[in-house]
Length: 170
Image (tube, rainbow, N blue to C red; front, side, top):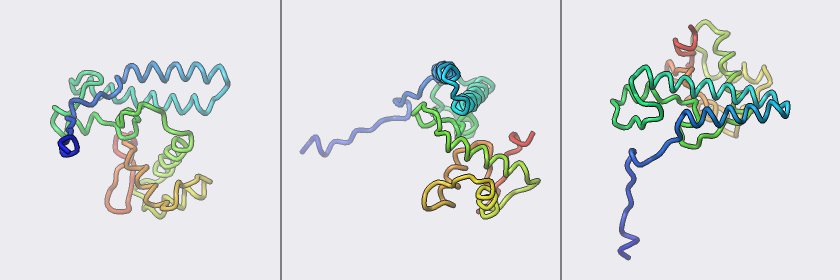
């Protein structure tokens, strides 16, 4: 009974995220392997992920945070700046996104880039369907929103209205 009643707590500082430089090295190895196999689409997806991880490392260096250092002791505003939502290392999984997910991300960025201002969720979904992009799951709108929430290049202007971030436009 005592063991059942006992709770185990883990602090944020106890969680070990993969070192971004180790992740970069892993992705470079994957690029080499898939280039040799002629898997061009997979190579392109890995290169996109490498760019995301590189941007995260750059942000950490610019903010004076050690590479791969836990940001739990950093002010929330600074931690939010260093966490890149589209980077799989933010989850601690350190694995690349699926090709379908990368294709959806690319298509979303293209659609938003084609518009001079914010786009409604309905317009975005229609444009994606017109381009032949498969929207995941049964709750397509909710899944699309969840996908965009993981993308640092996209901002929610207000409910149901999305645009590229200023950094993505320039």
